[in-house]
Image (cartoon, rainbow, N blue to C red; front, side, top):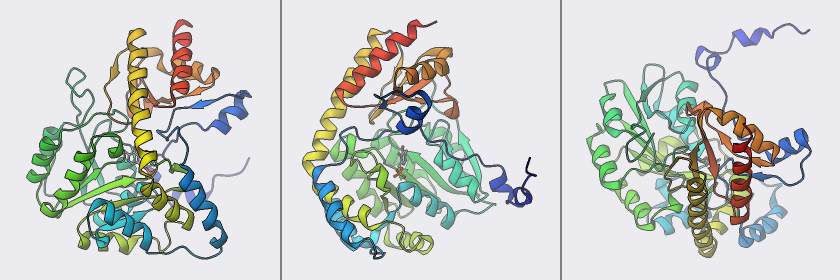
Length: 376
Ligand SMILES: *Cc1c(COP(=O)(O)O)cnc(C)c1O
């Protein structure tokens, strides 16, 4: 046996204690393990429609130039985003996925003496971003199971954790994995109450699924709250998870800081053209929204018929409670060719998170769920 590599002891403390992000199981992986041909993956909140035709065309055209470095400034994509969001281009920071932007926030605003606040059951990347730079994560208790937003962010609990060391607060709205949503007036009063020297990151990875007026409103907050950073992504509603492209919107001075740590060519040339084409394809986005609404209804009806509790969601995923046997149910679903997400890593061990698929995929999942719940 090989001896342990000495470098393991050399990793800085923050990294030595870090656990890497656990992605959902891939279709390929399950195919290799079980040899099933028909697999439905409802595990990573991807768009079940696949990329839009316009996107595929734009990518096909752009492949002729992949021997060249991409436009490090993302001129055309930023211009398109600025037009759409009615902001100036210098307020936009492009990322290799919005995860990349979250990471930039950590590198710009955090160091070991500083603290970060996020909620219990919040998106796990906040904890990773915090620990990776040795900052201290303070986890606010979530709302109770019996509240209107079970497991959702408790802004009062988050506020109570603010102290002189607090540098960043992460809020996901809606939150993943819970799908819970904070009403904007409540959220705005919270942001208003946060000291202006604390960065508030509002992660809106799923905002395209919600009310269009609401996603415009939060952008307007940027004029009032210079400490606000909003992050969004092309991975979910725009169907580009595999290309890795996201962005933040902030006041220009903040964007300038983020840009200092951004890798020079962090968004590749295919992602740049694809994101622009996706942004222009409003019909695709509308189709996505409609399909998602139908799918959520279908899943809720299915859970109700199976007498299962679920957490009402405004995203493209929903959490359903299957009890103590959740990990068995998860594994039995795999054998039926359905990949969902088990939520032990989020300390919600009795729940499964399922992404909204096509109506046919949802049906396959619901049938498989009914079947495996009977295997006791
Ligand atoms: C999926 C997701 C992201 C987006 O990640 P990308 O890096 O843009 O693919 C960000 N925040 C939350 C809460 C998410 O669920």
